[in-house]
Length: 240
Picture 1 (cartoon, rainbow, N blue to C red):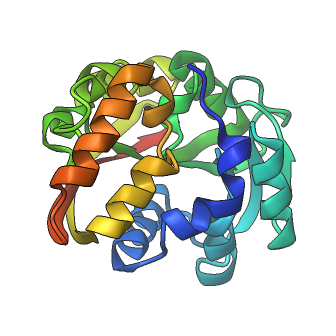
Picture 2: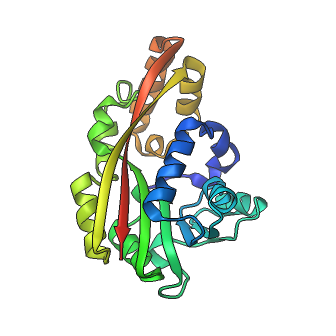
Picture 3: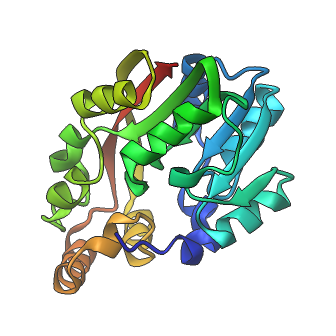
């Protein structure tokens, strides 16, 4: 899967604003992972906003990793103890953390290896908290109407509820709980087109070139001035 997160670092925060929906997921992760005051590793930290919020609002002691050098560089400007590393080969001792957190990064890794590594670096009784998109919703994602390959492409990257439960159990998390969450937001035409044109989501990197060009042209011609969209999450908690 070729996705260019180094190139997305500069506009990453602009295209993913911190709003009420963002804070709802933050609160859910803190609750599920019992992250408040804990020693926490974030896997796939991006520009470091979640790690920063966990340190400031949940008083967690935070370490963070990301595979993108540019993302890690931006996270460090926020004072985050971040380093370049892959989820499948975490450079930490066994049992070092109380918890691991992953927000919209699970689809970018080799899940069996990454989850096994997450289980390795938390102590007995340690937790993992995950926020990922529910693949059952991909037919209803607002840009699927313009890019019909999206359900097949992302369906191969995001785990179903059943698959995630099984994978967490296999990785070594003895207790697994998963809950759904649906969020709504209003998008303007300009914002939606900016998302497509900038390829804000890694999905756009994986579309066939002709489909991307044709879909963009259709979106430019057909998108209304504003519209309602929904996002369906799977929120997971595992205890080792």
